Length: 272
Image (tube, rainbow, N blue to C red; front, side):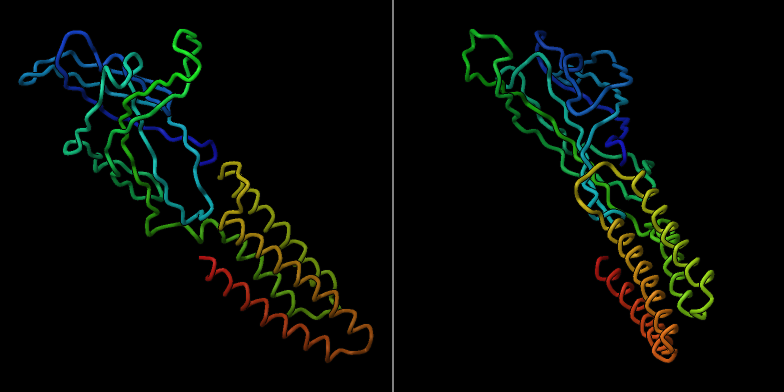
C-alpha cells in the first residue's frame, strides 16, 4: 500500500490469423513494469495461430485507503498492442478461460476475479508527427483484467490498534489515582500521548501519501484527543483540590471516567 504497487504473475495468450502480425511480441503492459517475460512458440490451433506469454510485473496503482483497515481494492492488468492501432488490431477477451489460480493468497484480503473485457483507449496526440495535424488521435484496443481485493474476516483490528487502546486505558486509569500524587497521575497521561502518537507514526508508514484522513487515522486522533482531555481533567481536578473542593475534584474524575470511557467507544463503533 505504501509504495502504490503490487506484483503479478500471469499468463496471457493470443489466437489470430495472418502472417502480418505477431500480437504475442508486440503487446505491452500499460500500467506496470515487466520484470520477466517467457514466450512460447507459435502453435497451430484449429484455423488459428496460438502463442502464450508468461509475465511477471510490478504494477502501479493509486490505492484508495480512506476506509483502511476495512478497504477493498480493484486492481487492473491492462494490455495494449504497441505497433497497431485499433483499426489494424482489435482484442477479443477470452472471458470463459480467464481465471485466478485458487492458490493465490494475499494476506488480509480475499482475491476474486473481476471483469474481463476490452475497451477502446484513445490517446489525444499526434506524437509529434506533424503530418497528422494538431487534433490527431490514436485509438488502441485495450484488454483489461480486473482483480478484486476484498478484506477478509480476519482484519487485524486489534493488531493495528492495541497500542492506542492500551494508551487510552492507561490515561483513564490515571483518573483513579489520587490527584495529589502528581508523578503517577500526570506520568500516565503524558506517556499515553507519546505511545498513541508512536502508533500513528507506525500506521503512517503502512499507508501511501494521501490528503484524505483514513479510518485508522480517525481512530488514532480520537485516542490522542481522549488522552489529552483526560490530562486536562487532571489539571482541573488538582485545581479543585488546591481550592479546598475535594468533593468536586472526585466528582469530576468520576464523571470524566464514565464519559471518556463510553463516548470514544461509541464513536469508534459508529466510524466502523
